[in-house]
Length: 165
Image (cartoon, rainbow, N blue to C red; front, side):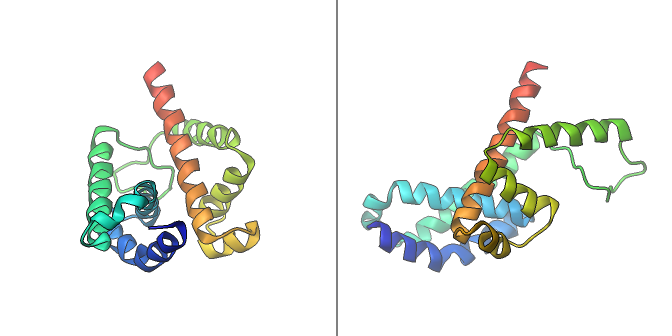
C-alpha cells in the first residue's frame, strides 16, 4: 500500500475506529489518541498490509488492543482530574489542585510552540478540531497528531517527575 492509498484508507476507516475506541474508553480525547496511535502503527507497516485479508479488520483489532492497553495502564497509574465537577463528598484540597494546575501549565510551556497552541485551543479554549485546523492552517490529521504528541510528552514528563519523587 503506497502513501496515497493509505491516506484514503485512513480517511475511510477513521470514524469507525473512533467509534470503537469511544465505546471502550468513554472519552473522545483518549479515543482520538488511540485512533492516532493505531493509524501510526498501520502506517509503519503499510508495505506489508497487502498480506492481510482485511486491513479494516486488522485496524479494528489494533484499535481495540490499544484502547484496552490504555485502560489497563489507567488502572496502574490513576490520573488526577483538574475539573471542578467532582463526584465525592468533598473536593480535593484546593492547594493540591492549584499546584497540579501550575505543574500542568509548566509542562505545557515546555512543549514546542505548535503543540502548545493546539493543546491550549483544544483543552483550554475547548475548540473543535476542525476549527483548530483552520486557525493553524493545517490538516485535521496533523492537529490530531500534534495533540497526541503533546499529550504523550506531558504524560512522560509527569511519569518522569513521579519516578523521581
